[in-house]
Image 1 (cartoon, rainbow, N blue to C red):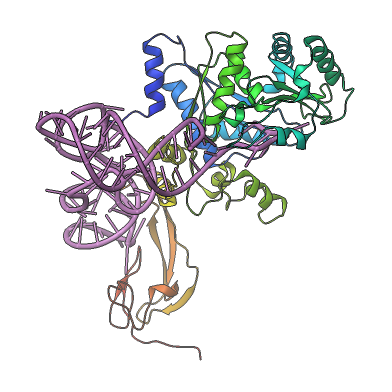
Image 2 (cartoon, rainbow, N blue to C red):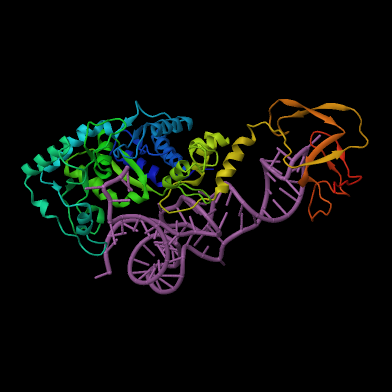
Length: 423
RNA sequence: UGGGGUGUGGCCAAGCGGUAAGGCAUCAGCUUUUGGUGCUGACAUUCGGGGGUUCGAAUCCCUCCACCCCAUCCA
């Protein structure tokens, strides 16, 4: 069977074809504010997979621009997940926070170009001024500030002279843009918080729209792959890079995020379950986190295969969890030894058997070419699963009934002579 | 008449003008000391709806409909 190419690979090949890039560089850029789940696995598979397929490389970058939600325990979990899935990132782990100095310089460059200004409206005013989806917004009076004043204010913001929310750096684009994201987007906010890596070195932090595109650029990324909800952010992504005159730059491409029925994949909800103690930690086997699946016995191969099977597209979709379950069963089928357990026991006494013996019970079915067996004790008293016996069997019942004998796995055929009930 | 996206069988998803891949699920048969696995077969006269162009359309044009995203100093 010929595997068809997804639209991202088609695009990558096209870019390679026309010489847009000489090397494919992607990146997996999670925010370290929670444990990675199966949805991250899809992104990991795409980014590392594409880099691998086209002899490029993929970076692992912690998008740590929000000091109040991020933590080092999450970067460890993220690193472990990527490794467990079998991928290796290029060089060392990157951090957007490592680029803060450069990002700061780019912000100053924008101010000098008259393309960014310090706004002093409060949060509520900024929202009001932004207008609505159908009505144009209006520009803040502070947008008229001179380059000098903006530079001075920005410097003082950096020095920590102002309180959170007092001022903010925004791009000067278009307050009536039909794309709401382009109505003078916020670039840098004041945040007097301790960053898990940068400590208290900064009192201003870049926002996603400013930091992401530049981080991609700094790393030489060619294809910045993200999920659909960022489609509207693509215009800013391009605006920042183009306005700064950065050539030979990355371009953003979006795909639909993974949704699986009966599966909670919202980070907010998962965090809530963990915090409230509804589950025993991020690696609780009941959770769809990579760590949870690992403890549940899922294999990296099965998860990767699942990501491969569901494909990549731009259509919002909800994959049937049966598809995931098929992948894990399919993978485990030829790898795992079989043993038995009786959960709800029903006592069986074999009247024409005396003594006891040990039966060799193979670990693998006839069609799995693997050796190995364990000893199974056998005597006249044994227990079978309650569901494996029925006095009034429904149609199509293949197990033990008063009139139907059955073979005990690895042992003998038995038939029911008498039913003895407790009370 | 805000803008940006998406609509192919129950669920994913190929297809890019030449007469609907594949996977999951489901159903039937064979195999089977797991009602597992494996094998075989069945499963869209039809591609959100309606027009049009064409010898020919899921693929091009028009129009309508549905759903998702955007008004966090989150990412």
